[in-house]
Image (cartoon, rainbow, N blue to C red):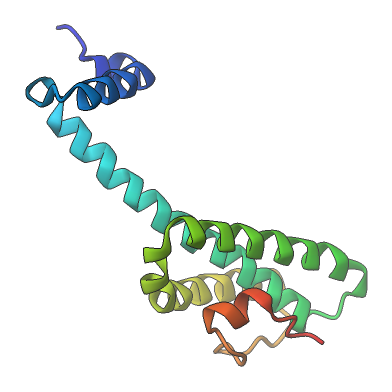
Length: 144
């Protein structure tokens, strides 16, 4: 059985697909895999939003509730990095704003579970006690 170009080399498949699209050669497109890749692209953006939010919330929780001044600088650096990356992501994919509330709730649940397991002696709040408005969340140093 001969493997399709998609199965042999995804980069060549992408280049071939782009060339066909630019040439208007739609009848020769690998529609099944094209649909799959377009759907995956959207999923990867949503996954990145959630992943970065989890890391950001974990580090905010640590900075706010874990008494470890030695670690504050590293946690704050991670907070800045994740905020920058989230800002870039949302700037490039504005429709992710419509998923902010849902993504925040899911990220909060996962981040809280992670830090609770990591810092068993710390009493973390069961809900986020600060604003999670997008602009505020990406710009406020809640610990000051």
